[in-house]
Image (tube, rainbow, N blue to C red; front, side, top):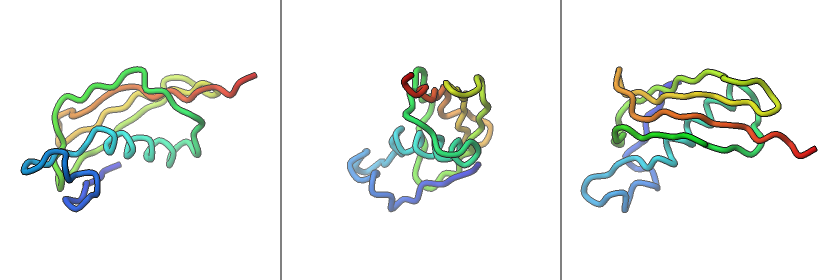
Length: 100
């Protein structure tokens, strides 16, 4: 899935004045939305590992790649967010199993 964060996005003012950078939480929101499109609604999540390697600037096109690494009920996905061939973020998202 590809996405672009519009330069008018409400999270950008103040992050950082004069040189806006897309906040990591906005990038992660796009990753979770992509996984939900493929897997359906998700239970509460943990992000045990996330690395931001390069900034994403407003207006830049990015691509999300992900793959399941464990089945339900405690499903896991590994993901990468790329700008061209450069990885800008990577990590793992874990769906919390419902309490017994």
